Each structure stands twice: as C-alpha cells, then as structure tokens.
Length: 340
Image (cartoon, rainbow, N blue to C red; front, side, top):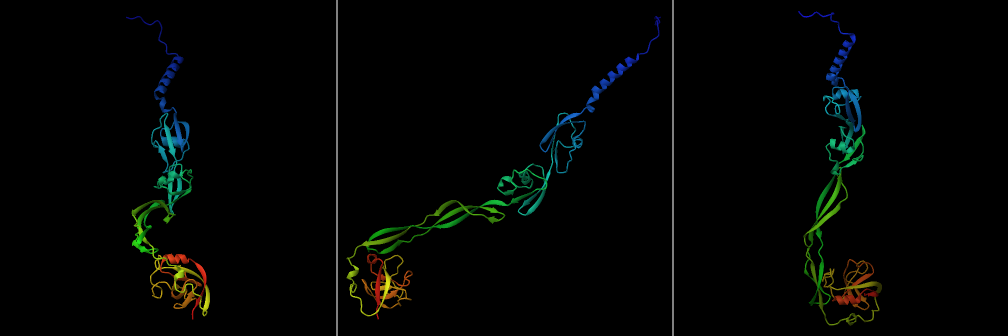
C-alpha cells in the first residue's frame, strides 16, 4: 500500500484563481480582439482628406458615423457594402445639381465633378469642340448654377469666282498709225476661294479667306495698234480750218475735244447713222440739235451728227480721220458759230 498523505489536500488559494482568470481573459482578447478594435481609415470627401478611426463594419456605416449624407447620384469608392479594413481609403464625390442651357434647351443634371468642363461632359458635349460657354470651362461648379452653351462650329465654304484677263498691246506696222484692232479676245479664268466662318446658333459670322486656287487660267486679250505712218496732215491743212469765221450766225463758247474712229469703244458710224469722218462733231442735242451746221475755229465747217456719253452741256467733240490728229487737237475752249 502506498503511504497515506501526511495531511489532507488544500484548495487553491484565491489569488491563484485570479491569476488564472486574468490569463484566460488575455488569451481570449488576443484571439478575438480584432472584433472590437477601431480601424484607421483615410476619408476623402470632394477632394478634402481626413483620417478617422471607427469600429464600423461596412463603408456605409462608416460614412453615417462620420455624418456624411449620400444621394443616389453621389459616387462612393469602394462601394457602401464593402467591409471596413484598417488602413483603407474611402473616396466620396457628391453630385452637384446644375442646369445646362444648350441653345435654349434646358438640361438638369447632377454632375459628379468640380468644374463647368465636367458639366459639359455630363451633358454629352466635348469641351474642346470650340463651343461658346458661359461661365468659362474652368469655373468651379456651384449647386443650382446655370451653364449656357451656344451651338458654335466652324463652316468651310468654297466659292468659284472669275479671274480677270489681262490686255496685251502689240504694234502692227501694216495698220495705220493710231488704229486699233483686237487680234484675240480675252477670256476670264476661274478660281476657287475657300472661306471659313464661325456659326453661332445658326447665324453665320464674318467670312475669312483661308485659301485661293486658280482652276482655269485666263486668256489674255491681244490688241494690235497700228504704227504705219501716213503722209503728214495737220489740222491747218483742212479746207476752211483757217478761214475767217462767218459773219452771220449765233455764237457759243464751248469746250472742244477730239476723237477718231480708231479710238477704243468708238464706232465707225455716228448716232445719226452717218460715217464718222472729218467734218462731223458730237454734241448735246439739248444744246445743239442734231443736223445743225456749225463753224469751229481751227477746224472748219462741220455738222452736228453724233452724240457721246461725256458730251453734255456746252461741249463738243470734233471728229478726225486718225488718232494722231485727234491727239494733236487735244482739249481747247473755242467760240463756235451756229450757222443759219
């Protein structure tokens, strides 16, 4: 038989029990302490960051504890149902209610952004398209603000125009001196011009020429000028050019110029149908009726048988056979006699 204990067993002392209980509690806290410990979270709301500690289990609870109210249009990342973990970052972007006026069409939007440019993107517009925006694109968004957008674009227009031809003069020894004749008629060319203009709400602005290109080259007109000299003839050689003025008849002081059938734009026939030649003068019928016989000092007897666009009032235009004679006459003031 074994030896009996000398004395009976004693129960544990009270302090031993306390030590055991504390050890057990510390062990349990070490195993499950993560359930009650606060998590450190970086909270970024509309660009403003702050650090918070929370014992919330999900993001939506965390935001509620932080006093952040969300609307359906707001954006939260990560999603509200995501479990909270220590060291995580939660980003909140509140939507800003604005009105976008697109050429009179009002569009109410909740914009998740910070500037007018963000509102244009939310409205389906490209801020870089060149549209006219008020206020400017970089303006911060403000709840309830109205953003006006004009329908602006650049229109390119092509326009075909005529290109004037030039006139080339060639001497021709076979033609009488001073005479002119068209050897080749000119033909205008064609050019295309490209214009750019800004169109705002359907209204075109000023055109700006951006390019021009000749499509068809013009054909120059060639005018032959006679250089063949004829026998010298002066005004004084005309019969009656140096004669004394008639004693009878009404006198009239006029400005007298000269022309010849070879002048540009001058027909060989007069306004009365007679041939334009020496002895014919052009008059203003209101002053000197057609068919009137007159005496012109230095020229001789003549008949009023022609008119002219520049012959108005007290003016006459005396006709010579050649351009040289007309040039020699020039422009002078004379006192003519209207013959009875």
